[in-house]
Length: 321
Image (spheres, rainbow, N blue to C red):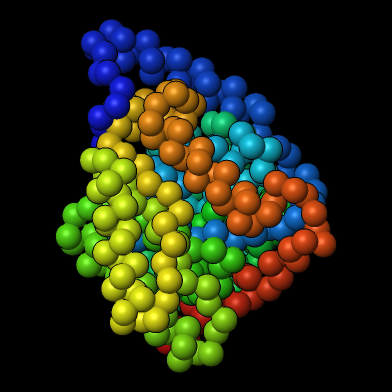
């Protein structure tokens, strides 16, 4: 995500803003909900993915988590990147333990999740760990079991996957309650997003899986019209060749608040809540809360997502079509 709507300040102003954002981050960490807090509905699983890297997927995931938390939705963000994880960097956090700690069957679950700015919880991804399917089976079992325990009590769990079409990406999307595919107006991003969606649809059909088609989030658009055009192109191709409808869940325009938040290592929804990007993420959070029906706290309206981690474990074992 890049910049457009907020006026860039001087170096001194940026320093002041960075200090202000760090203070907000500290306040957010103190307000995060406890690990044993019960969930009334859920957890609902939302996978956030993209066909290629560099589209602002992790920044969107971090800010969406903070926006959901601001709407009283207890949210856990899991950085599912096993090699180049950086959600913790965007939050200004220094993890004591990362995702690879969960490989130990004796790992205390409270060591996995940490309080993040804005009141959500973050499970930091691993750095230089490799791919989950390459791990021995007992480590895969330990990892997913610990993840399942560590997200207990959440209303919504956001999974920030790596880019591309790896087994873990496909499995996370096929098992989730909702999948968001982040795409930018760049032709390469559009082509890769469609390729990912095509792979997911084909895998689901081969496996006989009840798979809801992904929803699109257009990022870094120059205007709402451009965002609509990008979504329309992807959706039209999906309808013609895959027979699926691909709704537009949300769109973010280019906004200077985004890179400022990255440099300050704090979500822009906290540092620039009135910016166009923050308002757009807020609208997306409201949309998700409505789709997943976590805001109404009605357990009878939508049953919990039972068996997600078990299904994920089966699929990453090499049986993703």
